[in-house]
Length: 435
Ligand code: ADP
Ligand code: ASP
Ligand code: MG
Image 1 (tube, protein in one colour):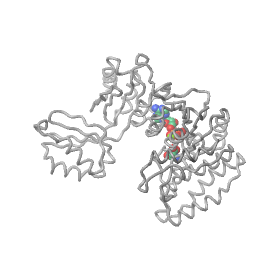
Image 2 (cartoon, helix red, strand yellow):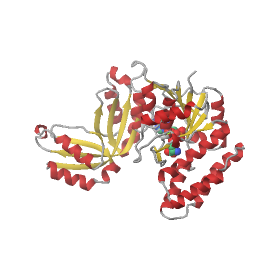
Image 3 (cartoon, protein in one colour):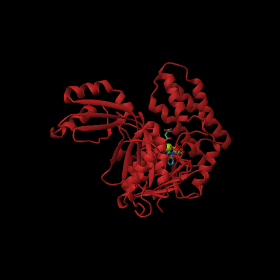
Image 4 (cartoon, protein in one colour):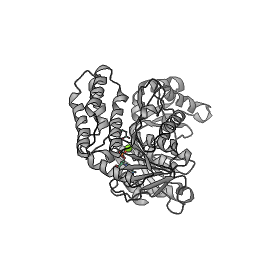
């Protein structure tokens, strides 16, 4: 039988009680042979993730300040798990080595990775599984780019010799042994890489909700769970802010056709969300989920007879690209072109970009508006159903929120609308009520 890969997120391994639940889940099915672990997450709303404590340690060390009190907090988190579960592990030696690195040559990614490293060591000891270090198998270039094929080969060969193993999530290393991490939440990506490398029959992602919810539960209480969803829909929703699964975790398993099952460690009997190639039939439901993000800026360029000028759009986008700004959407009119971008990345080079646009394009009018939120209404079912867009727009209008931008992908997989930050939550609530 092909194995199952089970990734446990931070809240699923936040303390000894959560370790017990995770171990019970692993032991319930002998096919759960490859486990990917996150660093201990929050035990309650007011808690701090170990990864955030590690970043804090690094910041203090890099500034030449005393990091010992924060390292002591980290120590306490692991010591408590070890004591309650009677795990024998040389924690003090490991932490001494980490402290020495911090004093001598602090490295941000290395520090951040220690939460996953230590937690996986503890989990491996507790389960009686082998520990396989991601630094030996998840490959990066020296400038921090992830190497998919090299990783797949290295992981497959490292795991071939292990019947039961725990692999730490979130990080890997380059040829020189220097550690690099994925972006935040990246243990989901490691789980997908391991699933691909061992040709798993299933990638289980164990977290603190019973699957992908129709929308963000912090905006709409009890939005309902999505039972089945396609890789593409999931990617759209996670990219647009449904933060339950890292947006890049889809690729390694999608190519291999390995389904992902998002499950709840605290409610292991719930079926969760199953993600695969096969979307539900269009008649079942037109909209699969709704997600959104704040913090966008619209740059609007107006010029008479823009339509006659070949290459105008390309030049505008090139100016942005030259400053490292990527654009999210680019709705155009006859004599206008708007570009929607992430506010933080635009603000980092705002003056230089505006100067270049004035200089190179000589527009009649140039304006910048901040405070835009984007909302994505996603579902394969929209393609076969008339009136979905009308329902979205009238729901938002009914909530008294003005729509500032509309973009419907040609695949009819999503409708994206832009609204004022202040109307963001009201718009999401209204759309959810309408579907
Ligand atoms: P883990 O630590 O297990 O990786 P995360 O905190 O990364 O867990 O992801 C789970 C959280 O994602 C949930 O607790 C929930 O608050 C949040 N979330 C945001 N949008 C959604 C959504 N559409 N469906 C489910 N969870 C969501
Ligand atoms: N521990 C890392 C983070 O907090 C990675 C993860 O949890 O997936 O982002
Ligand atoms: Mg996560």
